[in-house]
Length: 215
Image (cartoon, one colour):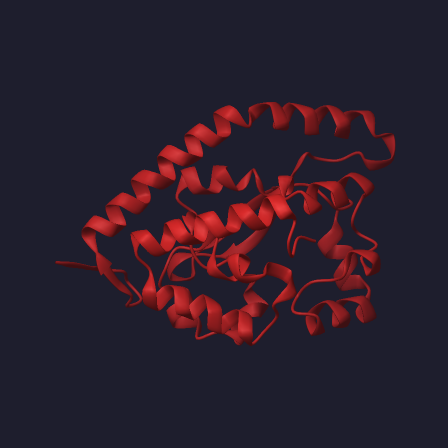
C-alpha cells in the first residue's frame, strides 16, 4: 500500500516509517557522540575576539510541501553575511551566476575558522537538530534557498523531505552545478529506496573524509 505525500510523490508506508525511525535514531546518537565538537567550536568562537557572534547560523530553506524552515550550521561567516552579500550588487550577481555559491577565495564573508569548518564539513553537524525535528531527513535532495527553485521541477523537489546527505553531494557536491545538479536530485526522488539511501550515505561519508567538493 502506498503513502502519498501532499504534493504527489508516492512511497511505501514501510519505507516512510523506516526512514523516519532511522533519522531519529541516527540524529540522537550523532548529537550525543558529537557533542564535544559543539563545546570545542563554542570555546574557539568565544576566544576569537575578531569574530564575535552566535555559534549557530540558520538560513531559511525550502522544505517538504514548500514549508520554509531554518537549516542550522556552525557559523562559518561574519555576522549578517546574507545582508552584506545582497548589499554588494556585483558580488551577489557572481553568487547567483556561480550556482548560488562563491569560491572560498572570492568570498569575503567566510572567517578563518569558517574555512576549516567547511573543508572538514564540521559546519554541517548542527543539521542533526533539523533531522531530529523533522525538517530534514538524513538522505534526500539538498534543501535549497527559494531563488534556486527556478532550477528545478519545484513541485517534484518539494514533494519529498530535503536531506543532509543526497545524491548530489555523493556525486561531487560543489563541483557539480546546475542544471546537472537538478537532474541528479530528480534521479534520487524517482528512485528513492532503503538500499539507495544506504549507498548514498556511504558515498557521502567517503567524500566527507576525502574532503571532496567541500567549500
